[in-house]
Image (cartoon, rainbow over all chains, first blue to last red; front, side, top):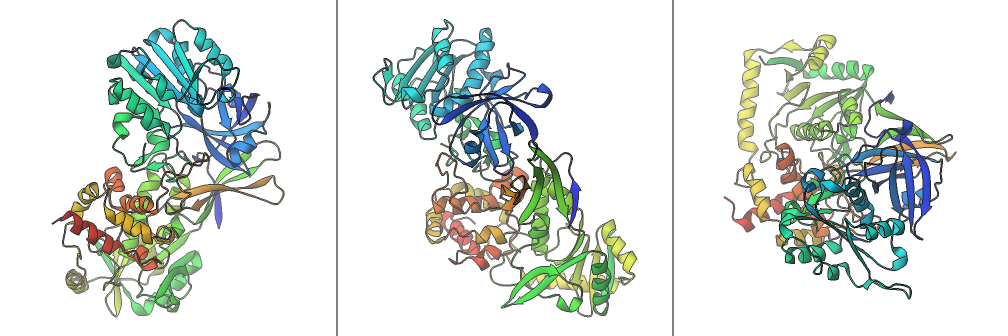
Length: 278
Length: 347
C-alpha cells in the first residue's frame, strides 16, 4: 500500500485554541475559541462547525456567536455523547480541531428591513444567539424584534446575563416561559406555544425564526400560521447527525436534502412537503 | 474512430503474468457455490471468466471498507497530516453493471467539495471491462437499467468471442497496455462483424422485465412515497445492511478515530456505514429520524431511483442484482419495482 500526503483534503482540521470557558448549567458548557493567527471564522449566523478531538472523534456544533465578533467565536455544548463529554474537560489554552463553517445559515439578506420574531426552545437559543446578537449589533437594519424563549426549568436557562440585557433593551421585546417553575420564578409557566398568540406583530412583514427540539416545530408552526405569518416567512434550523459536513456521508440526509450543506436552516415553505423533515 | 484489437485466448496468461508483475492485478475468482470475488491473481487459470456479479462490487478498491483520512499525533496538541492510501492496480474483467457503478461513485466523489482520497485513488486503477454474453441470473435487471452493453468508464473492454477476445481500446492508459505487452493484434472487419453478431444476439437475451420505460421510474417514485409496499418490505427487513454493503453505488460512511496503544497517536478512518442501521440517522440527543425499518427501506430505494436522478440525472441502481441475491429476508428489488408499477398502473 502506498501513501501520499494530501495538502487540501476536506478532512484537514484547523488547530484552534480555547480562549475562555464557563459552566452554564450542569449539562452545558460555554467555550470561546480563536482560530490560528486570530483569523476570523467568517461564518453566517446559523452555520455550524465540526469540532474535532483526535482519539475521540468529531461532532457538529452550532456557532453561538455573531460574526460581528471577529477575533473569536463561541460554542455552547451540551454533554450528551463522546466528543461533547471530552470537550467538557477542555479548559483555557487547550487546543481543539475545527473544520468549517458548514451549511446554510439564516438568510440575513432576506431578513433585513423586516420585523423579526425569534422563537427558541431549550438549546435552540444557541444557534439563535448568533443571529440575535448579529441583529442587535446591526439593530437599525431590521424592523421590530420579538424574542420568545422557552426552557424546561429556570436553572436550565442559558445565557442568563445576556437574556437580562435583551430584556432591558428598548428596541427588543423579550418574553420567556418555563415548563416547570421553581419557588423563585416570577415569570410565565407553560409551553412556548402559549406565548405566541399574545405577541403583537404585523404578519405581512414579520419573519419568524424558530429553533428548538424536533418535537417543538409542528406545534410552533401551527401557532405561527394561526397568526397569519406566511409559510415562506418562517425559517427553522433542523437538527441531524451531520457527520462529515460535506454532503456525502449520508447521516444527515432527509429525502434528497443534505442537512449539512442544504441546511441546517430551511424555509418552512421549502421543506413542509418533505417526508421526515418536521 | 473506434480502435479494436484482438487478444488470442492463449495469450491471456501472458497478459496476466506481465501486468501482475508491474502492479496488483485484480480479477474475479471463484469462491465455490456460485460465488465470486475480486482478488489479486498472477495467473489466468485463477480467473473466472464466466461469473455472476461478485459478492462485493469493485467499489471495494475505489472506496475501501476502511481507509485512513488522517494520521494524528496528540503528544503536543492536535497535530495531524491528511493522507491517501492507494495501490496501483489493474482491475480485470469488470462487467458493464459494475462499470456503471464506478461511474456513479466517480460522480459523487468529484462533486464539490471534492473528495481527494477517492480522486487520487481512482486514477491509480486501470479498468479492463468484460462483456456479459449471457444474462447472469434471474435477479439482474441490467437491461432495464441500460447497463447490459458497455457505456464507457473503462480503459480496455474485452468481449469473449470464443478463441479470442475482441478488445475496445478506450484510453491512452489502455493503449499503453496494448503497446507494452505486444500481445495484441489489429482487429479485422470480420472480427468486428462477429462482435456485432453477439450484440444482436444479446438484444434477444437481455430483456426489460418490467414492460415500462426506465424513464417512468422517477415519476412512479413520486407517487409511491406512502405506498403500503414500504411497510411490507420493512416488516421483513432485518436491518442487517447486507444490501448496502454489496451495492456497487452505496457510499454512505462513518468517520471514526482508531487510537494506537500509546493513546497519543492514531488514525482517523472512513468506514462503510449503512442507512439500514437503526442508529444511522440518530442524533446524540436520542432522536432517531428514520426509526421505522419501512422508512429506511423506502430511503434506500429512493436513493437508487429518485434522489440521484434529481441531483445527477442518473439512476444509482446498476441492475446488478446483488441486493436481491444477498438479502436474508428475500426482499427482491425486481419484485418491489414490479409491485410499485402494478400499484400505480404505470404503462
